[in-house]
Length: 416
Image 1 (cartoon, rainbow, N blue to C red):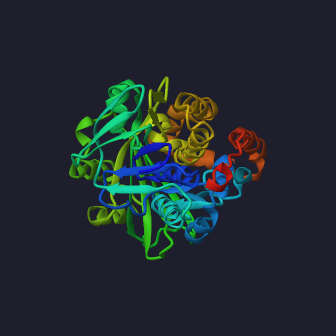
Image 2: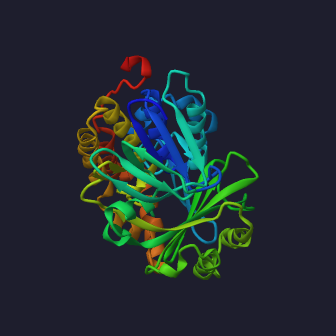
Image 3: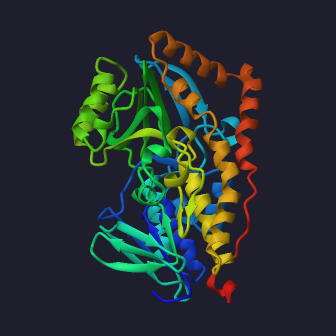
């Protein structure tokens, strides 16, 4: 790689590709390494609102997002007999409710970023992209970070960015054991593609949600009307044996949902043959510092709030925008750049991570009576007499939209 800066990005997901895109636009050379052999398609729906939508607009992502976005009308809550109890439209809470007006599958958003990278003009930084590659060892000193890759290659970099997710290998290598920074919040979550359920009672374009004791089941419509995404979260004590054991993960889901109604039998029947089964713990990451020397963490690797916040992708995009902006603004002073990135973003992360444990408990009432109370609460919340409650929640959610987003000029032409 040529140029004054040499930057390695570990992780080819949304956070990694977003920061790589912005760095390349600034004329900075980047290598991206991704452990997977190919980009992961599909995945859970993510939403863009407030500052993350502004970032997407500034990064030029909105045309691609518009082409691939999901057209969700809102959430519809039903019981096990398929009886409708409440509907929360996308317009609820001033557009800051559980369903945003801009929603897109995680894999599709990642592809939008990859398309933007592929379309960069010649004056951009140089990109080297390696799949099936990862960092085996990293040693840093005052002059550079020396990286030894799994392939046997070795290279030196000025900055190494860890965007390799919740279970970040780079975080463990540089900062210490996962247990020092991760907090299990009492639940596991899974999502996978299934044939569109029959006789669900859910109107077209709506996300169907059915709580059962200890577990929440949702079905999200896909762009293809023949398929849907099943999303299941269940509250149980942590079980390390579940990690990477798909058979045990699916057995847990079957055991938790056996005998329940609605379209749950259809979901369980389709689960073994799903092409994109994903399962992980609901975990929060809290770190006293996001950088050490020339290594800095980004996205879930540094500040995962758990899927319950609905802000994981938003923070990844905002963080990538800030990190690239600060590096481009101070290319010869990585300490200053990484410190500015953290100082700007940490207040928003702290706000997002508040009350996550309460969200997990409320999402998973553990008795049938608790399920009935939860459905009644949602019905009241969705009714007109609940205007005061909705107003309070709208103001609470709006706090995140007030985050002050710096305006960076990140094109190579601007830097000349």
